[in-house]
Length: 310
Image (tube, rainbow, N blue to C red; front, side, top):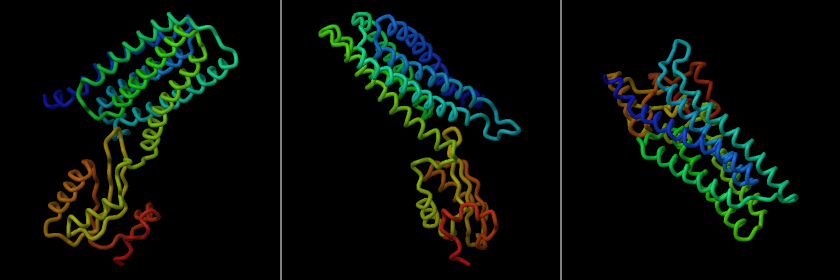
């Protein structure tokens, strides 16, 4: 029973993502048709944005499903990394779509196209309503800090601005008939898309390269650990990486031989969890300075700091 209980927020995530995906995908199709019928590039830019939204929501949905899958024989972390990979692919797709729309906008500056303002207006307003609905669906659920749900909500928020841009362009075209505002605003919408793409690309690449979480200062962690627990003389061979949002850590700790080995180990684990939210740490305790070949792996980064004790 406990098992079923622990998944409650996850399933809630899946439901919300599914709903938001339905709304976004439907309106994306409407915006593409509206953009083609009215000849508005800003609508197409917004539809491009909606497409990446729908993709983000779909990836997030798959991620929630994959995190249910138990870890197999070969994959000790289960399928959690697939979500990071999905975020990476999504970010690349966003960059591609942005490039296409900016290119088309440049063409339109030279050869302005007629735009049906009223059609554009109707579709843009409908798009805005759809985005507000999707954003509301994503935001009112459990506030789990899930990269994918967060990415999806971020997309939808960017989309809101995209729809507002399309509405502005439609108003200006209706009032003044000045059509170049359409490509101008489509470029602005594209910049919004690019911004969220860049953020997503940075986070996902860092995870794929086994990077430490951006907020973690490893040198400070070593100092604090030595300061907080007097028996700890030296910390080295530290590795931290992320798997599906969870930080994983391995480290070597040189200690003064304790009376109670397990109690000291527990204190170190408690320190890591309390101060750094790292609950999955593998700690190797040593009584002599470490000189094994396995310590050489990250010696360059640690600057020979653990050789002072020889």
